[in-house]
Length: 390
Ligand code: GLY
Image (tube, rainbow, N blue to C red; front, side, top):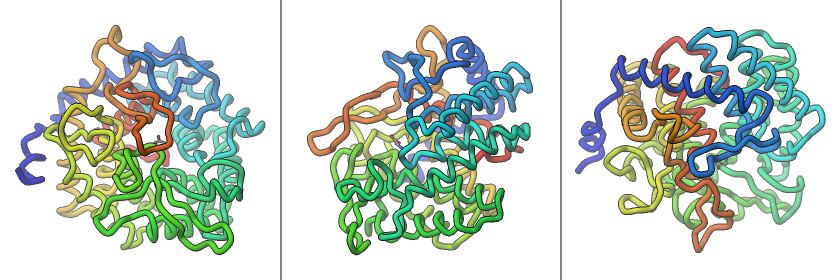
């Protein structure tokens, strides 16, 4: 079966089904408000139910992002009120640097606080977003030209960046626009250039993480943390690469970003099973390994973003593909019964332990908070007229 015939075999989400899916997702956000207005959602569900936790994980921004999307869809002020309570928690977190010494400032602060600024001119949201951008700038390593993902800054054992960070760099573009200070943008451009130079293999698959030489800044080697093994393509990493290129293209319409988007997408599509939702690593193309539904939701957002930016025939192709991916997610992965789950999208995978990777096994075949968020973002995009939080 060709890639194209596999895609065409999946029915697209039609407009009625889109409205139903959006209404169901917003109803689920509403049901979750009592438990999570003053608390954060865990990064992943446990038995398909998210526990409430403190606001100290890298994933905490995705739940308030869902609240803002529900506010946009319904215009119900109850959502705005809850999201603004969350903004105060995020402002407190960055002012006090609570669990912020890592690179995930965009994931944390764009769907929560930058969204608050863009949607309702919340000045605390803007302030928190700019403080987060400053924190991210501190992760920049001039020797090698990249944003260090994890660990103590400059630690030779942690001298690496990861492909996921392409979704953190839009915060830097936004900070440059807000402040007029070009240094944020320059770091975003340099980090992206480094990523494109080293993280993409000749076959257009991607390394999850990439080490640089701390003395010389020369590229050292790729390695995985959450993928199956060092030379495989972690499904979510490939999705972060695709959608990272699309989100950066809005700020920097460079031909190499568009070209990289095309190449990473082509590899990804070639590895999808019949329902267009990948296994957790693209080394698996059939069998019983868990899926990562969040990867499909992330890619749907990237397709719809790039379609808005470039127009033309490619845009129609990408919109059609996103509709089919979302059709599959809405029919077979979305939560429609709150007794089954308090999440949005079943069958995500956070970190599956393999004999070759270095992650802790957690959140396997569960809802994952970014999967829920990007599913709702993709539905909102498909509905039309959405202005990005990123
Ligand atoms: N950014 C970490 C992950 O996608 O699991």
